[in-house]
Each structure stands twice: as structure tokens, then as C-alpha cells.
Image (tube, rainbow, N blue to C red; front, side, top):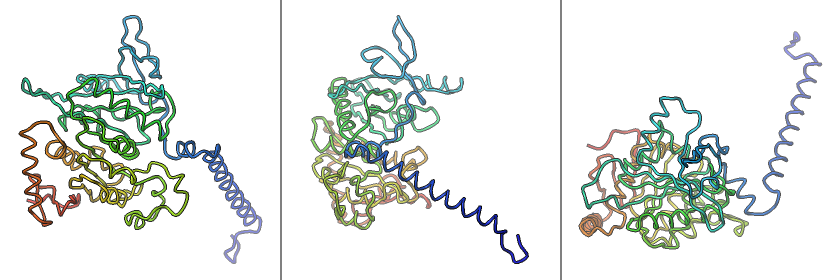
Length: 396
């Protein structure tokens, strides 16, 4: 530093060169990203690169064959299709392996082949709590996961997982990996995930012909759930949407325009995951859960989709929850709200339950928009909105 407080001329020139080199590197990165995303310039390929981020194959779990002739560990579902196998989590300590074995006591693993010839890995967990004879668990929830996880994540012993959800919600839980996710074959795309959930839905109907099926999607999983539910498949009794988005292009719109229902300014023909155009076709009770701090998919998307529902139930707005925390196990309110939906709001063939629910809806309508306190003191319903503030104590 000179006496006048300035850097020597040589250091100033070096700093300028570094700054110019930094700008040049950023430009190179931007050009590389544009080339990767836009080449080839096909909407389906661009969508796949932007929307899907599957974990590295075989990093979180692999498949252990249970044949008498072989017990090898494989990474592709096609190698175990039609044969007994189990999921084996990777990099687990011995104590966690014991926990994993106990966790999977009531879990079966399966594969299904889609009409596009992709082979998917799935898991089916039943509740551990026994029911009285002649009163089996009839509800079956098919869970469509977000865009950056796989079954290995949803089978971790110390995190929210599929077997625990089966116990908490007291229902059969089915989860699966999309094409190109986990050990499932193929590659992820909008058309593939829409096709994937149809294959799993058909599998559930074959294996549980008396099931009352509920579709539950989280983040990008809400897109394929809405697509299937809008076609009104048989045996569907309810839909749960966690952090849903209106469409791909609308994620880049101002939230005010999304909530007002304004279409994207251009390239509508290139828009993908257009749930906002399909959701009004769903004719079964539908629950939406969304967090107020969600910056990935702002709350405006959930409100917009809610406004277009044909058969809505009170929406859950979680104050203080973001895109991840709304369904990680830390937010018990989300699980409690979904449990209430399954028990009292989803359609059912149980006549006594149907009469109870009809009476509940009648009394709710008689409130004429006034505040309704449910039997769970954590929930306060105003009109058809249910808001939960995580920073306050439950209402006594």
C-alpha cells in the first residue's frame, strides 16, 4: 500500500486481470449451461435437463437378489424383474442395518414394467398395527416423490420413510422410482413419469382389488398425480398434493400473476407440466398442502390450483415451512392433516363412515364462512382454508 492509500500499479493491474478472467470464466460457464440445456433444441429434452435431478444410480441403494441360485447385488431393475429381491441401503453402519431390517419387516419390494418398456422399482409397506378380523386396511396411498430423491432416501431409518408413513397414516403405502431414478431403467421425462404412475396404479389394483386408492404427490410428483387423477381412474378415492406447481413456465412468473391466473407471456406451446389446465377435471376430494416460505414453488401456485378444484377440502397453509421442511417429518402438522383427510374426507365404500363424513360436511357448510375449530386444536379453519402457524402455541 502506498502512502496515499492506493495499491501499487503492478498489483492493480494484476487485480484487473483477475477480474477480467473471472468474468470470462463466468461467461464460459453460462455458454456451457445454455449449450447443455438447449442442445438438442427439443422441448422434451430441455424439460428433462431442467426439471429432473436424479441421484447417482446405486449411491443410496442397490438391489439384492434373493434367489436360491444367486444373491448378488445389482443396480438395474431389469436384472431382478420377476424375481424375489430386496432393497439394500448403501453406506449403512451395522446398528443402522439392524434398524433397516426391522423397518422392512412389513415391506415388500416389487418391479413393474411400463407400456414404454421401462422397469420400475417399487416398495409396499403395510401398517404394523393389527386390525380386528374382517376389518383390513383398505386405503392404499401411491406416493410420487420429488425430482431429486429416490427410494433409498425414502427408506432411510432415521428420516421420514415409507414404512413409518404407513404406520402414521394407518394405510398401505406404495412408493416407486421414476424411469431413470434409483435402479429403475429408462430416462426421466414428463411423458415417462405420467406413464410410470399408471403402471404402479394398475399394479396396486391387481394386488389389492378391494383397495380405496389415494394418489399423493410431492413437488414434481404432483404433476403426474394430477395427470392421472384428471383421467378419473376407477377406485380412486382421493388426491393429496404437497407443494404443487401450476406449470413449468409459471415457476418463472411473478407470484401475483400466478395467483391471478395470468398465462405465461409467451411460448405457451412449450410449457410443460400444465397441472393448472388439468386439475379441474379431478372429481374426487383433493387436499393441497403448501408452505408460506416455499421459494422453490411459491404459495401462489398452491392457491391458484386450489381455486380451480372441483371437489376441494380445507387447504393446509403451513406458516414457516419451506419446500423441503413441509414434508420431512419435522412438520407433524402436515402428516396430521393428511391423516385427517384419509380418515374423514376421502371417499369410502364404508357406509357408516360415509354417513359420518356427510354429516361433518353438512355442519361445516352451516357455519357459513365463520371460523371453524376442528377436533385437533392445532388447526383453525376459515372458510375452506386451514392455516397452521408454527410460531404460536396450539389453540386451547
